Length: 396
Image 1 (tube, rainbow, N blue to C red):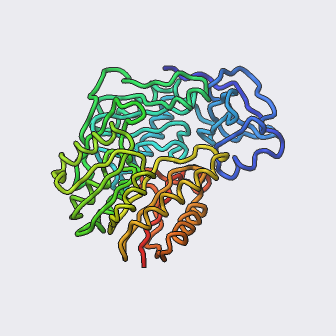
Image 2: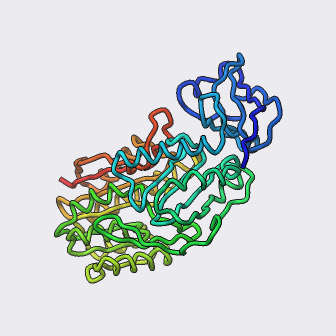
Image 3: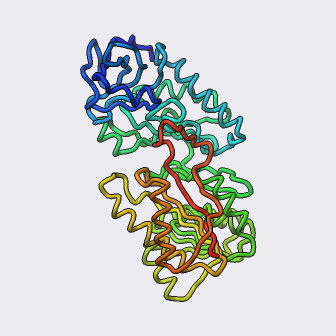
């Protein structure tokens, strides 16, 4: 795939370069004065301020409201060598932090200087998710750059349908090149987990919770444990291997729950585990009515909102599940509660949980504020790179 010369120029309106100069890579349609020269949707253009000064280069696509994301602030070509440098820098960051294992996030979009690209490693498979039209056109360069990742033998495309509709591309859900295994086994010490690669929306494993799982497991010995929205059972497995006396895992997806059952078997802890399929809100209410109580509870729900307009309804949902969980805790019990909704800020999440504790009639101590694992780095100038927020709470 040969590099194309960059002749298109995106010129910002006067006074609309503040966000970019402050370190954020996003440019919206309303900030653009004009696009001149030769360009095609999804190709790199030079970005200039209203006075013609160079700001950087990024993929331009006039279709969505977010029309450009800067890839570089240097006057350099966006080519195969560019992608190799970016991937090598991302890998160096993970290795330095001791996070490069057989399962980790290799590239985290804006945080690794590759906005619109997410890459996860699962054993011998690299799962590549393109979120922009520009990134889909660079897939050969991306695959080539990932060849420096030792032990990777197969590449799987897992684009999001929503991104495809917004950006105007056909999402890839399948193997890039030679077909690989439909399922792999990974290690997250001291546990092993099965990960579905060809699983549609259920592909993968929540790598962003790795460090939080280790933290919770360290508190699980001799405790009864409730894992709500358990997905494929990672929190429950880690807790049981660490010595929890009993774990109940709740999940609405039968496919995810089936894999959770196999993960429990793989780690030899099925005798102390109970899986419950159904709506978490309904099952929490039923659990409370039965008088069950737990020493340790994890709430790790999917995003309750993907838009700002649904924020109020999402807040009600978060408050409800936290209220129910707090009522199910024994005195001195511990709750690890999370939100992965981009539009719920850490301050808003804390306010929601505070209100839930008040309605539950309990006083809680914050033992730790939690966030995503370090292989999902956060840029201070790009708050969108921080999406997972959590609280480790103790009933006092």
